[in-house]
Structure formats: structure tokens, C-alpha cells
Image (tube, rainbow, N blue to C red; front, side, top):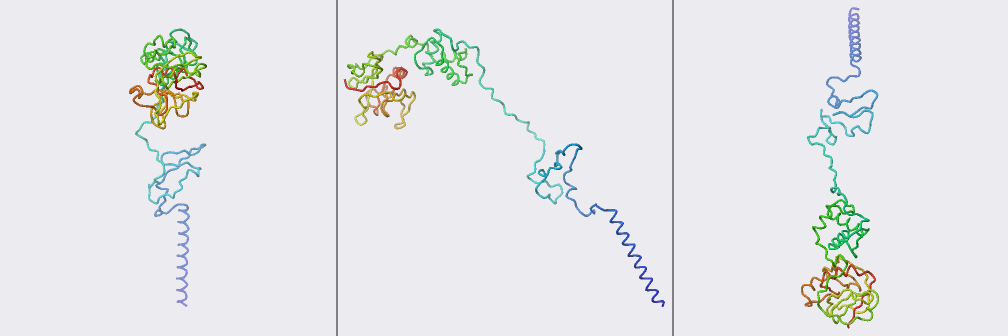
Length: 327
């Protein structure tokens, strides 16, 4: 009987102790609910802090990310090492370099008051045209009228020099033009051809040269004459092609003009080229000017007087007749 009683007491003591342990465990769990135990590490403990202002979306501060914007959240899993930051994440760090704003090109200095402008007339306009013509900015006959041709010539001259392009002649434009040219001659101011340098004696005009506007080229006398309605306006010496590359004979017409032409076949300069038959043209030849008839062209009609051929180039138009013959 006594043995049974002792067993019952022990069971009761164990039961009471177990009940007390359960109550204690429940109480501890209730006290620390939702909190991590001290030995559990939280990556957020060393990470960025989120800041939210009432009534406004969360804003970025150094080391923070916006709240409520899934696209702004990092796609990579945060590092397990406290304080690590993904290498491709932007950092808001102050820069020692001052902000640099590209400087705006101020452009050319403004033009001064116009001395001559479209609509003006007089001998000063004629002189401006003659000076522009000396440096190949003006073509045709010079006049006393400041018209569209003069305006475009002045605009081109100004653009080439880096001036403000107005088409009007101010003091700066006039000073530069005068510095680059010489005083025009009476012949230049009155549209007279340069004086002949002498040379070969031309033969009789071919009958086909008696009417219209014609470049009349005589192989016998080695001359070229510019003839308008039967009147000879200019005569120059010329040189022709060799026996292997002869200059063609017959009646032709100017097909095209090229002031600064360079031969694509022979890679030689052909200034003031006036093409009349395929690749054959009347043009200035530095070689002819330097060596005379100790040589030949590749079939073209060479002119050795540069001033004369430049004048011819301005007079001759596409479609004008070309006659090459033996007198």
C-alpha cells in the first residue's frame, strides 16, 4: 500500500513540473512574438533605411530606395555580408568636377552698317563687281547696278572669309576685297577683252564662222577666234593634239563648262574647260604657257593666255558653235 502511494506522489510531482514548464514556455513565446531572436541575423539591419513622407511618394535619399515602386527595387538578392552594395547600383556621391555646360558658338561677328546694298547704282558698284570678278566671284559683264548677281557674289565672298553673310558690302567686306584685289583697269570696268599678246597670224575665216556665236579654230594658223555675227572679238594662240591623239575637225557645240576642271583620265588640271566633243575641250594649259609648241595636248585645244581664256570662259555659253578647220 505504501509503495503505491509513493508512486502516485511522484507521478503527481512530475505532472505538476511538466505543466509549469509548458506555462513558462507559452509565456516566453507570447512575450517575444514577431521578434527575431538575438542570434538570428537580419540583412536589413545593415541595409538602407526607407523614408516615407506623409501625403507624398517616398523619395530617394542617399542609401535609400523609393517605396511602392516595384520597378525601382533591386533585382539581385541582397548580399549576406553586412554593408555590401551591388556593383551596378548607382551611388549619389558628390563630384569634385564643376558641371560643364557646352559653350554656344557665338558665330561670326556682326556686320557693320551697309556701305553698298541691293538696289544701289553708280561707279562704285561697277568697281566692286570688277574686283569680285578678278577673284572669280562675279561672272558676266560689270554694270553700275547692284542686283541679284552682285548680291550672291558678295554673299559667297563673305561666307568664304567667315564674315556674317548679308549680301551687303560693309566696311570690313570692302577692306578685305580691296586687300585681295588690285585697282580695276579701264578695260575691266568697260568689259573690254584683254589686249592681244600678238603671236600667230590667223588665216581667213571659215564660212561657217560668219554667223552666230562661234569659237572659230584654225589648225593651219594655230589660232582660235571668238566671233559674234561675223565680228572677231578675240584672237588667241592654240595648240592641238598629237598624231596619235588628234583634235577632231568639223562643226560642234559647247556641251558643258567647268571652271576648275581636272582630267579624270590623265589627272591633269584643265582650267576654264569648255567641252565640245566628248572629252575634248578648249582650256588653259600651263604646259603650253611654259613650253610653247614643244609638246601637244591629248586632243584638246590648249590656250596659253590665261587671262584671255578666262575672259572667253565668261563670254561663251553652252550651245555656242565650235568650228575646227584648216584654212
